[in-house]
Image (cartoon, rainbow, N blue to C red; front, side):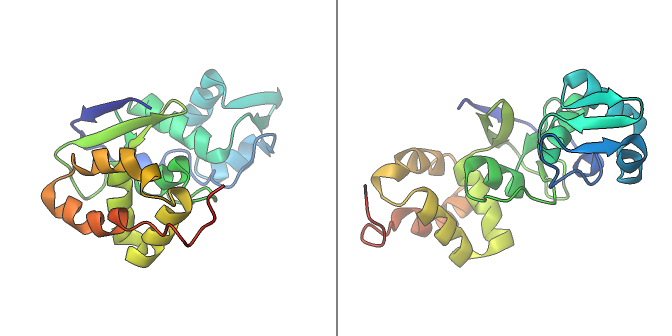
Amino acid sequence: TQSKSVKPKRRKRLREIGGKLTGIQPGTIRTRRQLLDGGMTRLELERALVNGTIARVERGRYRFEVSGLRTRMGLVLAVAPDAVFSHRVAAHLHGLRKREPDYMDVAGCLTRRRESVQVNTIDGVPVTSLAETLVDLLELWGPEAVADALDRKLPTVASRSNLFHDLEKLPAHQRNRLRPLVEWAPERRRSLK
């Protein structure tokens, strides 16, 4: 993964781009009417065809080449190349959450403004760093759920070494909220193979 710092710009409605495409698996076929009724615009459909996330099967019928979430992320990046995905999307891409999120979060483009965002690139998609994602999830899920997800992903202190590095880059108030969860690792709770 690459890291860089981005100054976010305010953009309207990025999280709404593509409509309701989450939960769609590669190979799913939809009609043009279904896509438009689901909230996708004609321009977004054309962009998805150009970037290869959707393929035309026949007139008025389209096949998804990637998941609905990947299609939406591609559409957001086409409109806002400096967008960085956060919260639930970042949790999914970091492996903290298995199911694709229904709601798409874009850092710096929501109601909460950030001075700068620590960015990692996962499979070509810019997302907030693992440490910043965990801080975001504390607000959504609460400390117990975040600790459980962290323990499943990184069960030992040794496996959290990169996370400790990212933790030091956070502002003090965020670092202080997250540090207790990161420092405690349930060594005996899991078998280490």
